[in-house]
Image 1: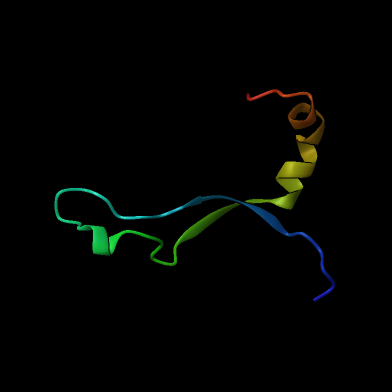
Image 2: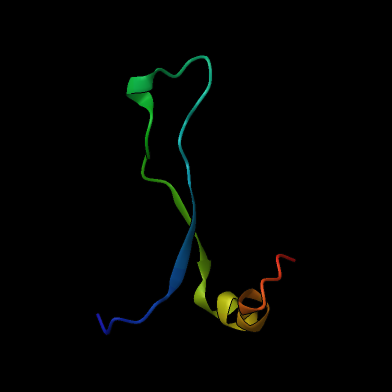
Length: 52
């Protein structure tokens, strides 16, 4: 409500495979986010371009 960032979206589940058709493609409402405290702890490394 205060406009604070609490997480950053990182992945979304989308079923694929032989049993799925193109009409099944897309999000099924299951998303994953990185908590903002984790992002803050690694912010300097992220800004420097580090991927570890």
